[in-house]
Image 1 (tube, rainbow over the protein chains, first blue to last red):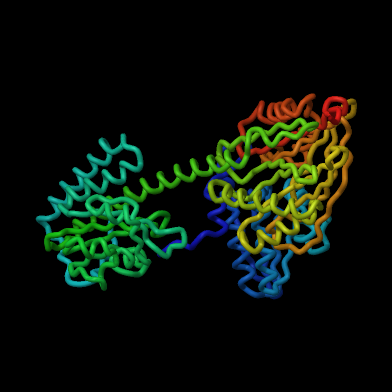
Image 2 (cartoon, helix red, strand yellow; image 1 turned 120 degrees about the vertical axis):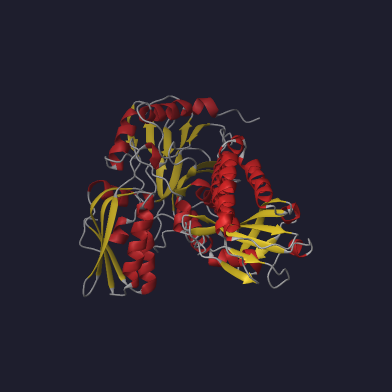
Length: 130
Length: 426
């Protein structure tokens, strides 16, 4: 029962950096295996308090070795740098497993954040506004 | 409280009905002590006092708290009553060895009534004449973080009630340790941040420079930083960056990234080259870290600057007699993103009297509006004839209405009008 060593969560600590509020961000992440891909769908706000959940879901989807992982962020309302790190880390993991990786459904605040950090073209995988 | 109990060697006595009343009495005494007298002590003293009380209550000679190291491979003596040598000599017990090491692995209480190198790993204990020992885990969020171990010189058997009481002390010690490490982390992160982010960066004749750093009210100190340094060629390097994450860990990684960038800056004047080398370094040595960084190199005559942008927010430029503008510095991927992509540098003129504001996302990010909207609002409102006034304007524009939630770093630089800084050559 010894805790795992330093990792993503250690960088984060446990806090929420809500702009103007004190509620903890609500996030639910679902994993749906299809025949040729695993869909990871996030619903809610992603920030430093819960980005590890998204990262873990993506990691487990990659682990199913279906050849492709699609992360759907259409129902994500807010995304901070820790969320971006989770998506980018997912891509790195997928690359190392030889699994194709794509983020879909980004719009508004989320798309804005992904574009400003220069990662959007690398995550969109074509077929999305660049 | 029901925890499984194992014995390492020998037997463990069972608790009995008549002991129950005595145990309840002990618990009551223990509660009274922890709730009243101890609440006024600082965390360091609290831990030691807790162990002193434990020795008294259980009539044992030693009580020691061991904490797991960061790699979960060794237990290190952190505080003791009766076996202070273990702390002073920095006794380390490999996880899995001896009583404490086995408690750390199993996460369950253990007792031992036969002391030799096979049952006890601490050399201090082996030479101290201790005859019987018991250990219970310190547990936080479901994981073992340490071990509380007691020892008695007289031959005795620890009852279930003794172990139960000991576990109660361990739970209390666990929360004390948590508070202590949180306080230490905060203090260390703040000290690190202060030493790396000087209030007044290196003075450069002809450039007016001002900075701000504000820890977030919710996040505390994080991984934001600014930097300004002059190179032997007379070029001026300016960095603004943000390591994802918060607290001591992010601050430590920030310090390493900042130093590495300075080192690469001395090797090449091309900002894209510097960030490419930095990215390689982070991938190799900080594989869990990711940071957005904007690095600018101002020419020795201050008329031009070259910028490379690793996923950071664009600076805002102010020029006398012209509307403010958001500098176009197309973002490449953050460093540590593990994405192979060519990094770009772009060249920008810097007019006399022009100012540039570099900042981190805490200044423009809100939960409901796109970041680009926050940048536009800031660009519209930014004013000031000096770098200091620019920082003041930026802070009041954003934080006049709301608290600093995420930490914020700002660096404003203004090119002085030519007649001010050009001095006759002697």
